[in-house]
Amino acid sequence: MRTYGPGFARAYNRLWAEFASGVAPRVQAFFETFPVSQRNRTVLDLCCGTGQLARHFLEAGYRVVGIDLSESMLEWARHNNAAYVAAGQARFLLGDAREFQLEEPAGLVVSTYDSLNHLPDLTDLRRCFVCTHRALDPEGLFVFDLNTRLGFRQRWNNITVLEGEEHLVVIRGIYGGWGDRALMRISGFVRAGEAWERFEDTVEETAFAIGDVREALGAAGFQVTWPALLSDLSTSLQDPEAHGRVFVVALKGP
Image (spheres, rainbow, N blue to C red):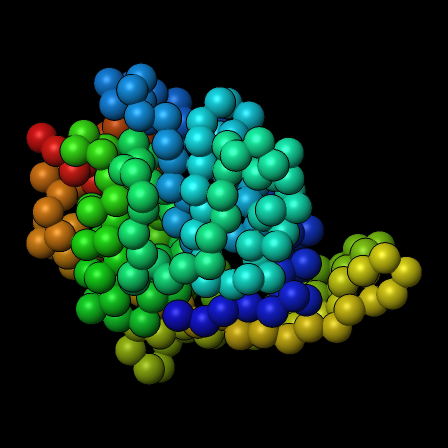
């Protein structure tokens, strides 16, 4: 699982953070249909990035713990949520999704924007699920999204150029030819004050079969799991592999 430097984190905060902001209201509304949401208002944002999803839950009155492997991402998360950090409502911690613990259980663990695709294999995904199960309230929920094989085929075999007044970014993606690994090379410039900061980084992801993911969740102790779309998290998909991005819901208890 790779970490990312300051240039990439700045670009991510500017260009890609809106995904989490769009996901958060739907996940919150879904979570609040469960009784646990009324008594456990702690959310773990796993692989929290620059903290936009966390900000939504903080503004809604939740307590948030964010974990990420990139200190550069965490610096932005703390900056974007500075008032909540100062008030003790939010903490953003350096940590690995495969090996973490919480001081107190969370009612909800959420991980977005294919963060768990960054794990290199099923062994590491299982480790993540074991840690997440341990971190949850007995009636807690785990909600995350994944790129499917179809999603990688549709969105990763291309070259994209993003150009604006404060950024110029070139994205080169490739999937296929070496199992279920996907690579994306991202390079460019982002404005940092009066100067321009050059960056170059590689995103590596893994395509997991949704059936294997559900088996791994069950082995970790989750009692009920189903794949869904963000637009309807309560309804199980009959053929999740027919969609490019799938959300997975896992309930710790019955």
